[in-house]
Length: 271
Ligand code: ATP
Image 1: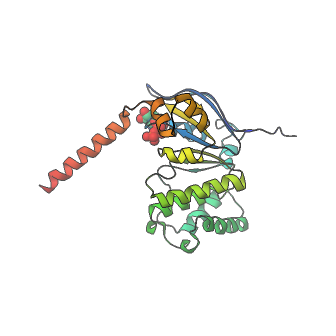
Image 2: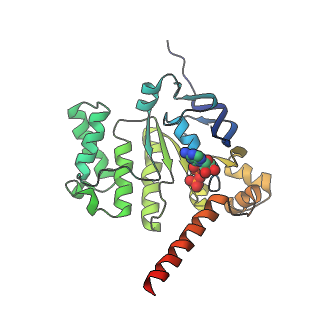
């Protein structure tokens, strides 16, 4: 008989170097099955790098990981079948319709045709896109695209859903709606949710467990209540700032510099 595992994710002493930069510095943490887990940190903290290693997209420098009991290093196929993902930069094909994007993904994951059709219908209805299934994705708004990506990520019945800033740039109405679907999936289908966000109120409302990463190290982990206790604060935003400080990270500073240069160039052109 197979041993039943209670952890969806187990990470031990995980390290990732990019040349001389150590982006992830020997982190260890666990995510329980059916939990909603928030992975928070300032820009450049190492969140995406960690997600990429867990989802087999990036090889760690050292350390161990288990995703649904499988190793992303040696059991890539099993791991890939067991999770769904929505990434920061969307990966839909703009020249295909919503239904075609779903079909393509289902075929890639070898979901049998009949089941695929049924599941596509169900999922498009959950994210309220049934009436737009034959519309080309390039005609979709940002919020519609994100909803479609969520539906697509769920097509092969994953046990874990990774969401890297799923609500970035969306209006409050769409953000609320997206969280309603995610919460529903967690409750109805028992899917483990691993997400990152810079909107602290989302993590505050949704997460069962929160880990804070900064400069590649996990500096706090626990329930909202325990993080508030540890930092003697009253909101997650205050706790986060107490833990991570208020200096702007290099990445955000350089993005800002880039924006300023662009503005200067545009002004120059107008003159
Ligand atoms: P954000 O909130 O801005 O998305 P993050 O927490 O997801 O940030 P990562 O993208 O994991 O951060 O980046 C961690 C560090 O590794 C940063 O210093 C980043 O500049 C660096 N980094 C990320 N990808 C690469 C790469 N391919 N090559 C070199 N350095 C990289």
